[in-house]
Every structure is written in structure tokens, then in C-alpha cells.
Image: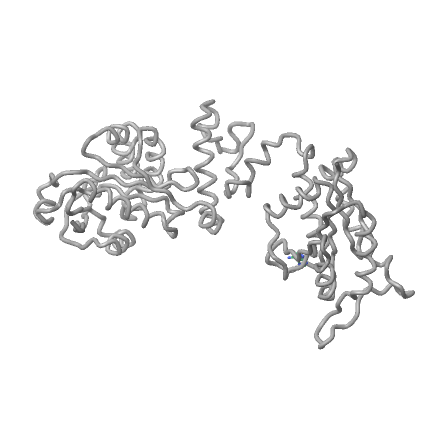
Length: 419
Ligand code: ADE
């Protein structure tokens, strides 16, 4: 059964774009019926007036309830066979229009329900109109905003809403899979970046993984980029849909951990450390092969933090007494493990990822009978020192630490675990 969308406006011509593109084609194919009405057809005076001055004073004009009432009565009655109707009133003062609302409305339209969009202008529509229709048993009224900005009227919002709803109707989009993966889909993530030919353009290359043909790696890469984008651009979405999940790392995580290490190691180094030295250190000690061997080792414990299925941080505990003389001299006799890595992608620094990871790592150490954990942190990395202090570590001394051609000074910090 094809559904129906009615749009009422004083500028019906504004809605002409609904004859174009996918929505236009859906209408031609009989998948969707869209009717646009001129509100002034229901005005009763010779000037076809639809507005008047606001009670209580103030700037601007308000749209009259009697004109809107006559229009909506007719438009709603035009389709009397329909049991379910929704009247949408676009307004910057409305609830936020979202993908899930679009899905809800598509279900209504798809089931043969009627969607009426009442486009206000000026200072809006007299509040009694929404109140009146909301009292009707079979009519839902929703005042919706398409974003936190003010437009001149509801027509642009009606275009936005109609397109967002229409493309969800069966048969409108050729490949329904594209609905699953796109931004604001069920995963609550923004979409990953996409590329096409040519493979190299103005010195910019398509990421190697996308040309590898390895669908497992491609899937992992896309998920990581989607999470990275969402964390940078819309951290609110992640906080709502994807709380971090911390678990023990497995062999298959080696590449994802190496990727996090490559993206974060330089951040933990002093700003004047040559990039080559940081890169050489990562290539030698934090590559996937080295990590795979750490994952197999009995005296290494690795944990990963995942957000929406992508690894965004990891820790590594090296169990046992410290080997280096300068560390042995400063830590306590109880020191039974080094927190040798604790990296979280920078876009998650302001979230709860690092705290969750630290909590889980310390409790894993404790579970394994460790009484005290130590770590080395670059003396210039105050952000990390603050983080470790917050998690109970105190400074006990210093050590030398080689990164590439340079020897860095680290503070040594230690934290006792409750026994
Ligand atoms: N009318 C004016 N501004 C609007 C907005 N942001 N959303 C919906 N309708 C509007």
C-alpha cells in the first residue's frame, strides 16, 4: 500500500524540488503520494490573510488558528480511510528531528498512514492548533526542529523530512544495504570515509587496506575510522550509543593494537623528540609481530578498550620484578608488575575510556596476585602524570629511557594495590 504525505504551506512552489530525484521518482513509480496545498486556499477574506498580530504584544505576526483549522480538517478528511495520522509542525522550538523519527514516520507512511506537514511562517502557528489536533484519538501531533538554527519557515524542514522519510520506504533506494551502513544508522556512528578511482589523486592515495581485497581488514578499518570520526565530531553520539568495553586482548587484536600504538606513541613523547625516533621506536617495539609475541607471553598481560567494536586503547602489564637497576633502586619491594603501555587514541581522551581501561588493568593485576604496579612516564608529559596521579600512582624516582637515538628522562611512579 502506498502512503501519503500532505504538505500545507503559503509557498507551495517552495516544495517543487520534491518532483526531482529519488523522491520524484518514488512518486512517479507510485511508491509515495505527495500532495502540496496552498494554505491561502482556506483564507476567507479577499486579501487571503493567514496571520494576525500576537496577543500580549511583541514583534512579528502569528498564523491564525481558524485558517489552519479549516485547512487541516480538509486535508485530514481527504483520506478518511486512514486510521493513523501524524501532523508534523516544523518549528525551531520543536523536539529534534532524528533518523529514528524518520524511521518511525516511514513505518507510518509505509503502512498506509497519513503524514501531514504544516509549514508555519512568521512567528509560528497559534498554539491552539497543535493542542486541538493532539486531542483527537487517531492523530499524533509532533512539533519538530531540524537543527539548532532558525529558518524563515517550515518549508525547508518539510523538504528535509520528506526526503529523509521517503528514502526509507521499500523500493525507493536501489540498494537497501546502503541504508544500513550510512551515518546515523543503527550503530549510532557517523559513516567512515569513502574513496573511488583514481587510486592516486593530487598526491593523495586511497588507503592501502581498501585495495587489499581482504574484507576482514577492510571491515576493521572502516569500523575504526567510523568510531574515530564520531569521537572527533560527535562525541555525544558515542557517549549515548557506545560505552567503552574493556577486555583481555587476544591474538587477533595485534594489528588493531599496533594501529593504536602508531597513532598515540608520539603523543606520549616530549614535543622536541624527532618524529623519526618515535616512528623507529614504534616500528621496532610496537609492530603487530612484536605485539603478537607479547600476547603469547606468560609474563605480559594486555587489555584493550573497544568502542562500538573498534579498539581505541590498550594497556600492557609486564609481570615480575623490574629488571633495570635504576628502577629497582626506587620502587618498593612489593613492585610486581610494570604498566609498560597505556595508550588511548586522542579523540577519546575526554571520554571515560582511559579511566575504564586503567580500572580494569589494575584489577587484572590484583587478580594475578600483584601487590604494587610501577610505570615510567616522560617528565614532560604532564597530562599523563596527572592521569596516573588521579589513579593513585605517586612519584618515587626517575629512570633513563631510550627512544631511538635519544635517552629520555622518565619519572617512575608506583601504586600499591589493596590486598
Ligand atoms: N522553522 C524555522 N526554523 C526551523 C528549524 N530549525 N526546524 C524546523 N522548522 C523551522
